[in-house]
Length: 386
Image (cartoon, rainbow, N blue to C red; front, side, top):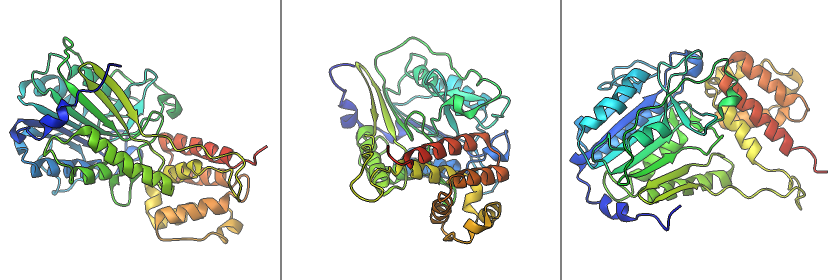
């Protein structure tokens, strides 16, 4: 790491001509793998980001919109596909033909952190047998080389999970997602804002149909100065502050991160982790951390069935009727899930009964792996201290 960051980007941001801003905006909700992979929210988030770009004066012709909507609707028009071949063609062939000073890359969808610590972003034509993807680090390096003239200022926003690849227990290895790069340069200022830290899920709100990180970031973009080129560090600080408050409330546990790749300066800025709870607290439950509980609730709410009252009831019907009779129920999904979980943990096998009921109705392996790990963390936290 070098002596210090280059602060010129923050000063130059207000002077960026919107006509010299280009954006690649990707939102993937539907995958060739089928309904188990469906992720409500990225398309709406991408359209909101496009609307923000428009509001700052960026021309429509400069916004490359690539979507894979879960629901085909006439309201979603004017976009191109989000399959691997199309997105690779944009990154390799189309962007180098563009001219500009500022580049935005926005990506919302499924992701996974491979064993080389590279975030892989799944394309719309990904399947269980062929998880077609773009390697984020490879794409970043390509766009910081001489294959992309201009665009010295680049902001990347990625709302995708960074869960570890090996925990997904896929039957096949993930295919190569790298892109060709040119000669390295020392002129680009790249700021990469990631929704979650390594090993973490990026929370999604299936009821409102949006990513939690994307929603917070878009709200902050709306009030930050700088037009189409706000200071990325100020943006990250605002987003991180919102997540700090959510973690303090026990609402979410993810930690957004910022990677800075500037001339002479590289830095990764994770959000500060919550302090560990003491093993022997002074009051009731003082030795129990809330992190595991929040993670289990988030893992359960990642299942689309949890946002539907009738489907939640079908899941509850698979549980012990004695415990079901004691459950406080609620129409709000998060409150309902919390009441179900707190009732079931009265018995040692109760949380695992919930796991079996949920995975019986939705056998998605990625969601199951995250739920299993979250339950193990939660149960470990709630063991009596020695």
